Amino acid sequence: MKYLAPAYVYTHEGLQKNKLIAIDDAGLITGIIDSSQAVAHEQIELLPQMLLLPGFVNVHSHVFQRQLRGHTHRPLSRQDTFWTWRRAMYAEAQRLTPELLYEEARQTYSEMLAAGYTSVGEFHYVHHQVDGRPYDRPNAMSEAILQAGKDTGLRVVLLMTAYARGGFQQALEAGQRRFCDATVEQYLARVEALRQQGYQVGVAPHSVRAVPGEWFHAIAAYSREHSLPLHVHADEQVAEIEQCRTAHGCRPIELLERYEALSPRTTIVHATHATEHELDILAQYGSTVCVCPTTEGDLGDGIAPYEDLRAREIPLTIGSDSNTRLDPLEELRWAEYSARMRYQRRRVLVADELAAPGPLLLDYGTRRGAAALAIQAGEIAPDQAADFVAIDLEHRQMRGWSEEDLLDTLFFGASSEVIAQTWVQGACVYRRNA
Image (cartoon, rainbow, N blue to C red; front, side):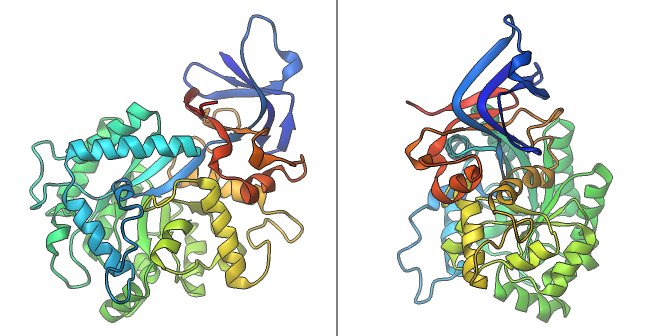
């Protein structure tokens, strides 16, 4: 047993001081006790002038896209959109090998840890060789990502992505061949192989445009059978919605309901252009939404319907998506800021009209994210994984903080530079250089 002794700790009861967090040898929190209860022989690590928060959860990442950072802002066409950016992304995907993917994932996951992410949902779809043929080890690319997580100390939940076609009633493009399995049975066999090896996995039909109905039904049934998360892109692009309406006479989230793909295990990635009716459907099924504000801003996708999401109490989570930026404070800040711009008022993402945003933003970035990935983390509480970020309260960006406004000072006045340590499963995996 060991103990951490921060100046402050944030639990479901709020901000507390003079507490010890007890951690067992398995890396689980066993209790939170008053510091006066410590005895001399116990192993205590002092964290003076630090605030201990639950580790942030990155629900949606495409790790290989980190290589595109800063390289897609020169004009790609007369009017750049997601669709022109996608061509550059496909080109990047073509050059990957298991070895290159491992190295890119290792570097990016190290960057995530330094930013305060302790877990990531890796929405992984570069599966096969460039011509679409499987590697001799069919999960070679997945194994590269999982090894990178192990070597850095970041918890990786591999969201194995299914991809079957180029679009509604469209054949595959050349750049999509390595994303696709020949049949849904082959896809599920690869998922099952990883699950049997003890890896944390989820299923991720890429989108309604890339995955047909019969695949969705089989994948959703597998998710139910094994209680696995199911993540899917939906309502990210207006063009996608119009194509769906033309092909099926309904919108993407309505189609997901037809496919029996919605449940409390389901996370809709983006939902940027979801209608009130679609959000009512998500609320009915208890599904989650993952927003990715820095990527949505980078690609010009639009602003999510935050007020409608909050009013329906739809669980909200964050993801770094294309990894244009890796900073959970920035993702959460821009969720609130872009909501303010959309609705032209302040304090949109709050628990009630008299509350400050900080506590709810923290909940979105931690507990809700952990639930979306079905991991035992996201809170500083007994029986949860000992995943923490230690905030340096003496950092210049935290100057002037008060106990009343501590979380708001963090989310609206600081960047991830204030993170001094990151802990995963009871081990300190990142320490900022002095």
